[in-house]
Image (cartoon, rainbow over all chains, first blue to last red; front, side):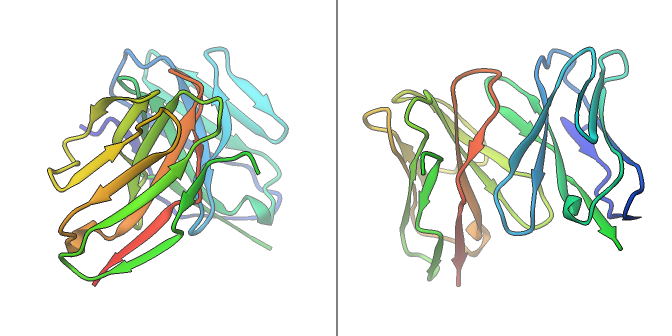
Length: 108
Length: 113
């Protein structure tokens, strides 16, 4: 089983839609979780950390379910500029482990 | 610009040649990481440094790969006798420490012909 698994997508959604991505992980000892965003042919950039109680940053909401070992990212009111690949990331043994990413395409 | 910088941005080399990449992390960051990314995949961990000490190397890092961070500041990644399978984006990142998010550089795109 992969350490981090994501649906590669693509998710094609219209502007204004709400879209959610899930990510499952295998290492129950992982303590830190993040979502990174990566635009085509660019470096990954931190979107938000994921806290145990769930957290929100504007239109973005992240949640962690330790019992089922998954994290989620919800994007409300999608914008064209949200089109990117969203990488699920967790703390491994002294390093961050990245999923393969979920591609989102928002269309007008 | 106080972000992570990598040089060169692009490198095209012939199979069998040696290449070296440089990474300058954010100055106050103790940890420096190297990742490799191919199309359609997420970044794969290669190695990391805590100050000048190289603390872990991935099994992906064959004997042809070597990384250094001699003074705990910039780092170099050298690939000897390059192979076509080495073609990828090589990403450098730095962080304040464990559990801290990574800040990536723009990457070095390597093409081995």
